[in-house]
Length: 203
Image (cartoon, rainbow, N blue to C red):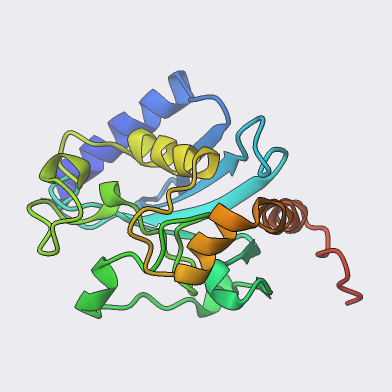
């Protein structure tokens, strides 16, 4: 199966190289291994994330595209679960979890990431029905999806955070009731994505 996966990934890489989506750069970390990619996503214009360049990694399974890749941000990032404090991710120390409970999003706002950087959006969820009924099968992964569609979904979520059915009540409340604070969080993450310290960080 990995031969079919490799062929598919090579075709997707060519497509992304020949016709790159605006604000997105993606490809294998090392062309000797097409199953590990890095991607750089520019913050959408007209949003608090504008000007940021957010780095991420995608890890593809041997049966891709039958199963979705895993995606995680590797940039410094503000996470609503961290009580508005910055979380710095050490890419060498990040751990993938096999806990089945992790297939459900802990929040529906901002970067939609777990504390270890993993991205939680519908398109990355395994194919089929959602046991909790929050997502339709059409929203979840299927073999017709692609790396480009994943990255465009992330851009869309940066542009339009979704606070519906949010598990993280505090984060959703910040988005709904204190947009100024939310925007400040986003702008801090932009600074950090560019290698600048967060404002007020003397280190």
